[in-house]
Image 1 (spheres, rainbow, N blue to C red):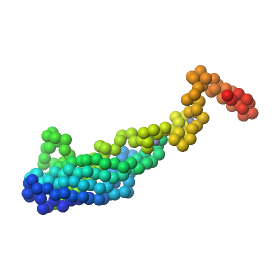
Image 2: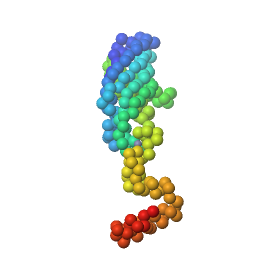
Image 3: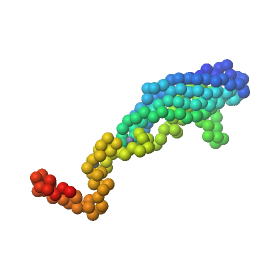
Image 4: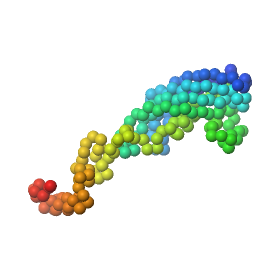
Length: 188
Ligand SMILES: [Zn+2]
Ligand SMILES: [Zn+2]
């Protein structure tokens, strides 16, 4: 995704509006592909500053994430605003202390939007994604996905007191030792 700014670069103060659609491949820490194959839409305004181009954009797309509670993969629509400064040679500029706007390298007469969008994505993707705010997660004991079914352990943990749970565990242990036929008799 890139925009041709050759018409405005030498005329400070002039702007062009743009709307681009393209794919963004973003890799997370574990080199998992975060962005899905669905195209992203980037709409905004590019303004010539004299030193380079200042870009403001609204980004819409869908990212593929893994739920931090139940480990299920899910797609999350995402929309955010971002901005960036594009200059021919970023190493020649010391903007970082002046403001929070990231600086990106221009490619001839073009602003390549991908780095700016990726930067915005990293800031806007939740650190601990949830497939649903009410996701019940996995049982810490047996690993059952509690969104799909209720396991035995969570039933015991939820209903029994600490004393009762210890008693049930002790009875279960004894049941195992004595064989499965006895287990039926002592289950509560
Ligand atoms: Zn989940
Ligand atoms: Zn369980």
